[in-house]
Image (cartoon, rainbow, N blue to C red; front, side, top):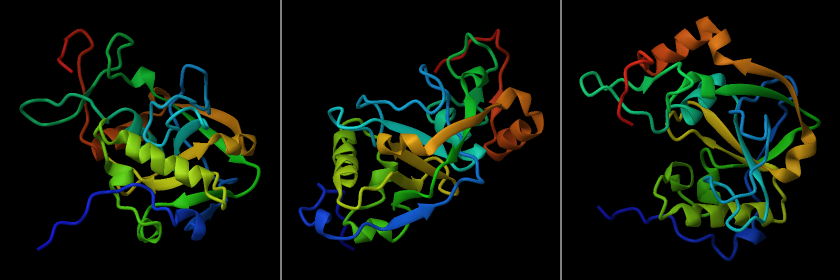
Length: 220
């Protein structure tokens, strides 16, 4: 059986087709993200991120429509694992690299429905892409993904961002929002995972995470 082709460059015809757009009315919903150095809902203009601009053409912020999505995408992406059980290892300590204290969720209300380029299902075929847009982890290939993001940003349909399935848990949905959506977002509260013991326990069970003793160093 022939091997499926790898993700290629954005096709020349992309600006001439209608994007698969999902209109997300999230005014009654919560969006969750990790607090950055510049506070909640900060937009990053650098190229350090999957759908970030290659050369500062726009800024991006990443959120999830679920607390589980934010948890798995911001905390569990590169944590070490117990060599015997395979469980992801995290710590509560402010000294540990992989720590719960580093993770803060935030919620946002939107002024109108967000118009998002939909890369969850058939939308990938419509625009001539593959799911590598959401799952590619190689730094070598990241510039290609960013060129796709730039092509979507520049598309005549002017999406507010991209919706895609989380790389580490496809049951969760992630949003990469372009800075043109900044006026649609207003933080309404913050969520500290350490202050939600029942929610945190559910997340720990869902992903079989193990909290380790802060005083015991671990390799990561």
